[in-house]
Every structure is written in C-alpha cells, then in structure tokens.
Amino acid sequence: MKNHDFAYHLTNFLTVYLPRHRNASQHTILSYRDTFSKFLLFCQNERGIPPEKLCLDMFSYQLIDDFLCWLEISLGAAVSTRNQRLGALRSFIRYLQIASPEHLLLCHSILALRSKRNARPLVKYLTHNEIKHLLALPDASSWEGRRDLALLSLLYDSAARVQEICDVTVGDVRTNAPSTVKLSGKCRKSRIVPLSSPVSALLKQYIKERALDLSGKATQPLFQNRQGTSLTRGGVSYILTKYSDKSKGCNSNPLPTKLTPHSLRHSKAMHLLESGVNLIYIRDFLGHEDIKTTQIYARADPEIKRNAILKAHVDDSAPQLPAWQDNPGLMKFLKNLG
Image 1 (cartoon, rainbow, N blue to C red):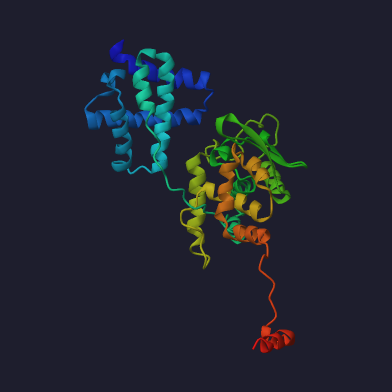
Image 2 (cartoon, rainbow, N blue to C red; image 1 turned 135 degrees about the vertical axis):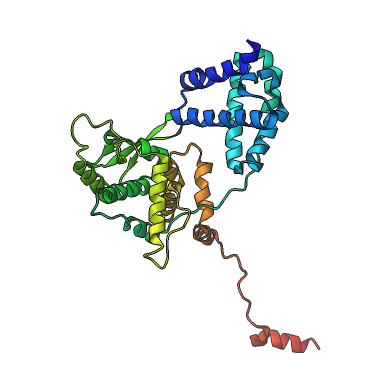
C-alpha cells in the first residue's frame, strides 16, 4: 500500500473528497487535476520519478517549492498561475491531514509555503464608444453573427464571468418584465442579474429565431456552437479575438489587441461606477463576496478620485487682510511713532 499511497489518496481526493465533501464544481476539479498532471510531469522529467513510483514519503517542502519554480522558469507561468497551482496543492495537503494523519508533520511543513507576491495589474476596460463599436461588428445577416451579437451584448450587460455565460441555459433567461438572467458563479453560488430593455429584446428575438422557446428546451445551453453543444471558454475568447482583429481594418481607433471576456466584465463595472452606482450594489451585481474586491474599480478611475477629493475639500484659507498702505489710521499711527 505504501508504494501506492499517493495514487490512492490523489484518486480519492479528485473523485470523492472534492465532489462529495467540498461540493466542488467540475471546473474546479478539472483545474486541480491539471495541477497534478503538471506535478507528475515535473517529478518524472526533472526528478526521474515515474508516476507509479511516487509515494507520500517523497513529498517535501523542497519538492513542492522546486515544482513551483519550475512552473515559472521552464513553463513561463505567471505568478497568478503559480499561486493557483499552490492553492490546489494546499487543498490536497489539507485533505491528507485527515485522511493520513501519520503524515501530519509533513503536511504542516508544506502548508508553510506562502503565495508569491504579485503586482496587481491595472484594470483594463473599454469606453462606452468602444463597447458600441464592438457590438456593431457582428454581421446581423448571418445566424452566427446574430448569435455573437446576443452573446457579446449579454456578456457586457450582465458583467458575467466567461464560465457563467457558457453555463447559461434557456431557462435561466427571463425576457418578460422585469427581465433578468440567472448566473451560476464560483462555488456554485447563483445570482439574479437585471437586464436592460434592449438586451432583453435582443435575447427574446434570438431565442425565438433559434426555436429555443419550445417546451423541453429550458435546460439547453443558450449559446451553442455549430455542433449544437455549449460554447466553451475558449470559444467565447475566440469570438472576442475575431472581432478585435476585425476592428483593425475598419476603424482608425481599433479595439485593444488583448481583448478578453473579463474585459467586458471590467467595462460594465467601471461604467456603473461612473454612473454613480454605489459600490455595494456593484459588488452584488458582480457576485463578489468581499467589497475589497470591488474597490479595485474605484482605485482604477482617476476622475472618480478627483471628484471625491473635490467634494471633500474644505476651503480653510485665511481671509485676505487689506493692504496697510491703504489704511489711513494705521499710516497716521506709524508717523506719530517718531
């Protein structure tokens, strides 16, 4: 059993512990699985340990630290990716503390590894005019163009994460007033987001055209590819990149080259803030747990900072005194001093 303890516990962690005890989403499980695939690749190529020979006694603080450095140096992973992989390993180690208490001391040493500090990048977002330009690019004469227009409009209007958009079903959309969409976010948390009238009308037309309003289709994905299956995260990113490239040939002010689905989420949040919407409401709209996460938008807009400073400014300057040369009484007093 000892030679196979790592394989046993890793299998149990991915197939039993995460889905049953942690209620982890399929996306989270796949992300953790990818982390361990890379870890096994590192052990085999860099340490000469084949997967079938790896056991828990070979685990150490140094092995995990070397793996994280290998991710950055050899694979060119970003600091955020490195920290994400460390998070997956920590989750496995916390599981081991209960499942294999004889390795408790080893677990404590590995849990001492800290995430690497990462410079917070500036929030990149599109202006109102750039959003209008983006939504004018899809060809409304083709079904694919109309799908893309509905997709991009909902992606911006709801400020949804890309996976949330991929998971939206026909039944999640309410086009009758008040129009809303149900988004299933991180940790299986759902929220109801209001939709603007133009986007609601666009989705209603799209659903009718695609015959998705028929009975029995409520559970079907709202946005599908040519094969009739749900669009993937990569598929949504491909669509955005396609229109970003298209904008270069038809406008003197093209869209940013690195346009991601999250750019539209950032854009909606910034536009809400610029319109004077309270951060608390924006937090709930975006599905953030902590208001600190939402505050990055307030820090990103210099005009918002300027207006806040001007509103808080108090004119405490001293009143100006009259020039002493223009005061006859004072002048007479000074002459009499001699």
